[in-house]
Image (cartoon, rainbow, N blue to C red):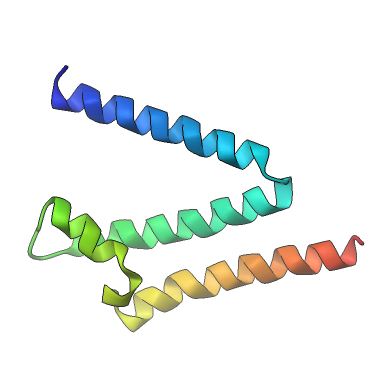
Length: 96
């Protein structure tokens, strides 16, 4: 099995695992986790894409640590994530 096929298979298994976990969680929690994770991955992708040193696999591990991001990048992840968490809490309180 070549490397590309292994990568596709690994991504497919990871996708299936994520879907199973999200489907087992209550809807509101799963949606909130999905939104926060998507914002994190969006910002992580931007950090990796803009990496001038092109460190390869180490690049992903380096940028995975949010402490290595600029303040602006951190805020671009944290603020929408907090908004999503607050919104779901407000929704739950209103619908009680």
